[in-house]
Figure 1 (cartoon, helix red, strand yellow):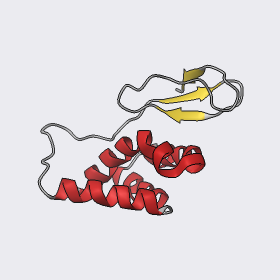
Figure 2: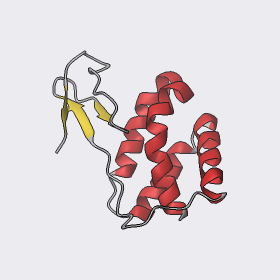
Figure 3: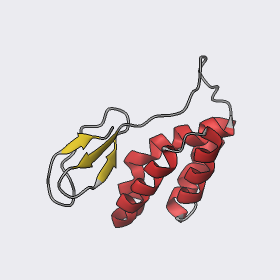
Figure 4: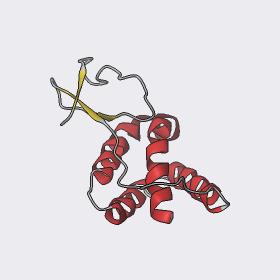
Length: 119
């Protein structure tokens, strides 16, 4: 359960990173996306934890989410499978963004270019 809770919380924290970390959010978002791309769920969970432990704000946010999950939120039935988050990249400068919960796709923060889905 903890692995699944970590991976679920990693998806949730994506949209919160700018509020939690300010200018450091983009670098952390890129590292988090790399960690989530790892095939094995256990490895991805460890890598996600390593990325988010680097900042007090993300450590505290994750601790709160994991404590809530432990208090009784039951996982939904079905195959938990690996968590996949759609990634988008700017063709002009290579900046990468991870889409969470159907968020609208923004313009590139570096050059203003359009982001395209990564394959």
